[in-house]
Image 1 (tube, rainbow over the protein chains, first blue to last red):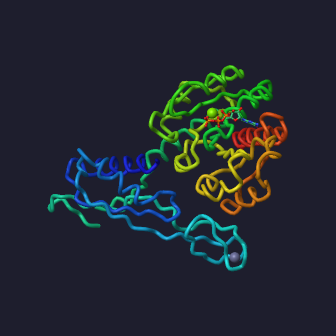
Image 2 (cartoon, rainbow over the protein chains, first blue to last red):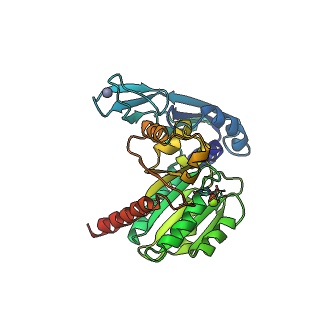
Image 3 (tube, chains in turn orange, red):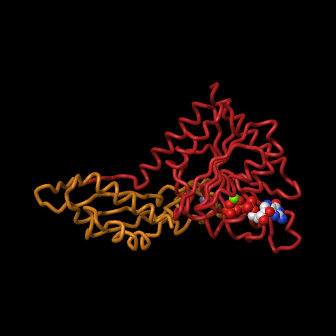
Amino acid sequence: MHELAITRNIVAIVAERAEGRAVRRVRLEVGALSGVVPEAIRFCFDVVARGTVLEGAELEIIDVPGRGRCRACGEDVALEGLIGRCACGSSALDIIAGEELKIKDMELDMATNVETA
Amino acid sequence: MTLEAAILEKNDRLAAENRAWLAGREVLAVNLVSSPGAGKTALLERTIRDLGGELSIAVIEGDQSTTRDAERIRNAGARSVQINTGAGCHLEADMVRAALRELRPEPGTLVMIENVGNLVCPAMFDLGEGARVAILSVAEGEDKPIKYPHMFRSCDLMIVTKTDLLPHVDFDLDTCLAHARSVNPDIATLALSSRSGEGLEGWYDWLRAQCANLSAAAFA
Ligand SMILES: Nc1nc2c(ncn2[C@@H]2O[C@H](COP(=O)(O)OP(=O)(O)OP(=O)(O)O)[C@@H](O)[C@H]2O)c(=O)[nH]1
Ligand SMILES: [Mg+2]
Ligand SMILES: [Zn+2]
């Protein structure tokens, strides 16, 4: 299950940036075409966060919808999965959104240290 | 606090380092992915026997446990390093980096990386390879590219293997190729059998072309 490896990466990156301060909330952006199941990350998060500065932190996952651009006619097409078809009939699409897999921001516990950018 | 950090930044950075390291040595690395038992090691054994005199081939074997595949490769006549991932279901760039340091390929070597048999997880992890190849055996069914689209989307080439079994299974090759193109319009495709040898010349030509591209890039 790659979500476990991915969750470990999330916790490692956030813990490093938190520099020892407790983390209250983490926000991720996960694209619909990223190959990652948000529920599986949630499932792993509490276990992986245990014993780190992220223990007990709230995890928010922002879903980013998939979009492709048709190679034949240049139109944009909404994509729920990697397989899609343009209204013109072509299925040769380049993905332009939905592959996001990133940590957007975090909120730290000590109010004085919380920066909002 | 804004982070805007790619979750896989560490793996991606190490993969980029591997890619630069390989390019500096004019070494082509090919990442072979498939479900368990599709025939990755069998294709490597055959390739080493057939091309060993022409190309210098070395292999990095990824499995959860045992060194059986690395031993099969050595018996076929090539150098190999085994990575055991334990509970891990895919290779990551740091493992390949360590294996490359151990393998120390000579310039011009073709390094084949046999990933852990799994059509899901290895799709997400760049190893720094020059090309990624999916192997799908006719026994698995023609719908695999649309059932595991992320993997087939990430590959440069799909090899349909065990074509010697086609008379015994319901597998329509054209449907399978159409499925692969529907998830990845740029994917190249080949069909072959490591057992009968049918179609292997196409694979060897593809490898030769990849190696030639690499040395052309080095002179550019
Ligand atoms: N008939 C036939 N059998 C094949 C062919 N290629 C491989 N096999 C058989 O398929 C089985 C699995 O082959 P391997 O090469 O071990 O498969 P693999 O993908 O390396 O397997 P893992 O490393 O365990 O994921 C073996 O029994 C092979 O002999 C082929 O072209 N035709
Ligand atoms: Mg094998
Ligand atoms: Zn179109």
